[in-house]
Length: 287
Image 1 (cartoon, helix red, strand yellow):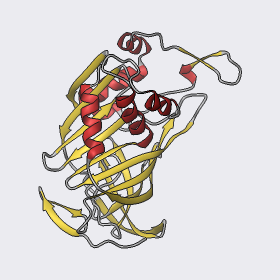
Image 2 (cartoon, rainbow, N blue to C red):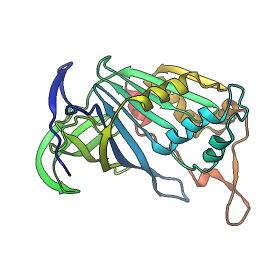
Image 3 (cartoon, one colour):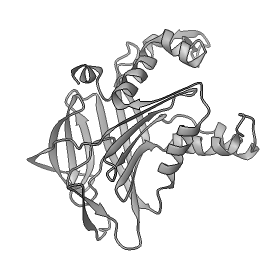
Image 4 (tube, rainbow, N blue to C red):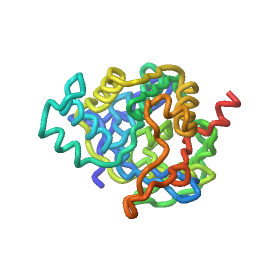
């Protein structure tokens, strides 16, 4: 991979990399895997389309497919939910998958924002920003041709292990795993329930996606919108995912059964999906 000259800037006591002249940011692709303990799964739910956009002192971690779906929806429908653009609507029907959650970091305001968007409900949480307290170990290894160092941190209720490379002078990483002197290439928690793996990096010309996603979901017409602290947001969204009666009340629909694509028979979703939050619920009990 071609090396790019970088300039280091001090912001709020932290060093991060500004792109070389002629470039304004970076887009980094990741795979995210979260373990699903449901009896009929007991394996990882994989999202290969996670993207980290870094622009100046801001970063956003989101799903590429979800962004495509949201941006097409903004064109396909008018403010009343009627189809306004047939071409955009047709393209929208071809997009499947993608997680409706994203995380924004703003070093300038020292805040983080978490969004969960299970339409017709939206949950937005805000919190003061703090980097994990990393301990850089002596362990080294090569990952995807990059020399990497291992770091450890106790953060947000999990014990994290991250491998970062100083070859890429970007002090961000997937989700909230930032603050190391180089890009996070791989990370996982000690229980191996959450994994992140680097895929690619490319120049980024503007911060339009972050601005779009923030504005789109803060103004989207929905049945319920919650805006509050990160703790309240996480607890409410976990209840939404784990309490069927609460979910039915919030959405106004009965979300209890699905149809098996092979047999056409109804199946109980209870055995097919079990939500596992990246920030464990017991973390908030200790806060």
